[in-house]
Image 1 (cartoon, rainbow, N blue to C red):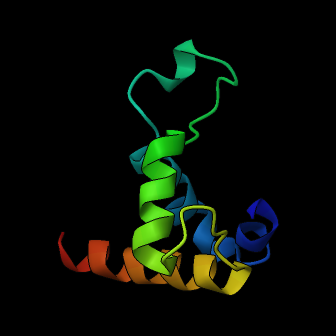
Image 2 (cartoon, rainbow, N blue to C red):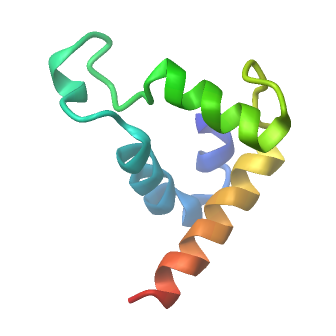
Length: 77
């Protein structure tokens, strides 16, 4: 999924912002020491988006979601 973001340089900053928003509090204290969402939260998001908690978003879905989030967050400022 990271490769999708790096193929679209304008999405690097929104991608980092999304990672931080999805990351659980204190993520830096537990392995893998990365801002990875909690598994239960990710499953909930995948079930609400795709109807399957094991679903994996496509690269296109990721790019579209980041672009949408960036536009919406820009309007809120």
